[in-house]
Length: 470
Image (cartoon, rainbow, N blue to C red; front, side, top):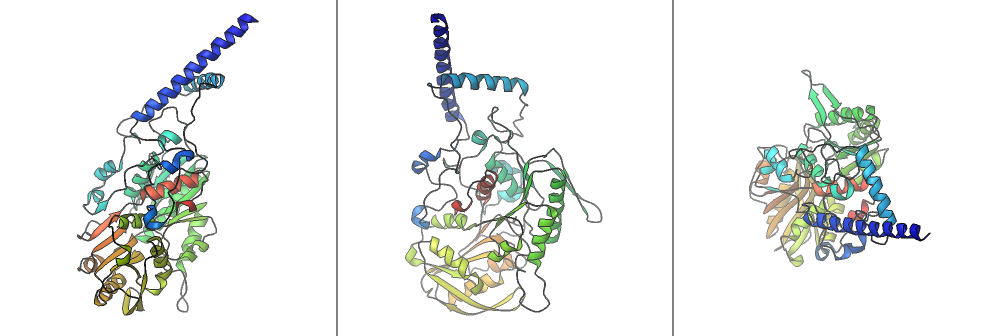
């Protein structure tokens, strides 16, 4: 009995030493790794602010902590020597069963960064493009903690999350992949001579959760059909779930009947996406809230105003000198919500009349804008007729400066000429739609929503709350 007790004591002592060594090595690796792991929820209150959430003094919102239910990588304590011994044996056995796949430095997700995406995509190198903020401790890239494919942690488990990109905005999809610490899953998309679209997934996705990033921006019909065919390909490849990530949802403006014998194309488009095989939709800044109800599947509606507000906060504009302006009556709810997050800034409304599609006329301005910095807020800029006429009316009413803030930069001709006419101090948009090469003027600023989309995708995949982001 004495010899058996001594053997048990020796084994526990060795296990405790091994566990302490593992904890020390883990701390050392975390300190030297270029990708920092996110903190646990117990220490989130003392962490630096999130990259995507407006500072407390601007929006009056508390800083977010790490995603619910996640407590970071497991740590071993010296008191659990037997557990450490068993975990070490299990890890060794698993390593023998599954050899490591060699990772190429040129294709490693850890080595890829938005800067690399900029080199591969000349549009990202534009002087008007503002990349995502640097990583903070609250929302760090995912591969160390969550085991992204090809991440720096060779012992991290493989994830079933698969990220696909269509051809409409591959630069944004690559930025989202960098945030998540994943590689874009290879997919073959080509067009035949007659315009038909061919899609083939290049690796097995059986039982995986697929997120397909494809804004249906111009040319809308081509990109919409490509989205539908890609969803069908993923469905026939036995994906467990398919989420259509729509940074921009085309046909959203055809959301109601204003005259007799008109179609409601937004509802029709929603039906097409559902029937193609999508299980969920993740959309950003829909033209109207009622578009959510057109889908017969769950919809996560993400708001890009957090990115715009964060940028406006850097302008250090005094609240007393600021007024938020809606360019039409239909956008009052959006402008009111935007003003509320800017410390309840005053609200003004531009009353316009639309005589035809893409043709508007300003009648009057409701509210006091004299001597103030006016921020025009809208969900999109198409031909820029409405927002440019509104800016001229604000200058006529005595506004000191006019900023334009919008999520979707459609920029149909002659939008660039109108926006560069000198009526705007700055035109602030996001990269939900790629900016055409010929559209460039000094007042244009492009903000990235990749971090916001990446965090939302992870929360949907992890069954965490999305509403807490806003």
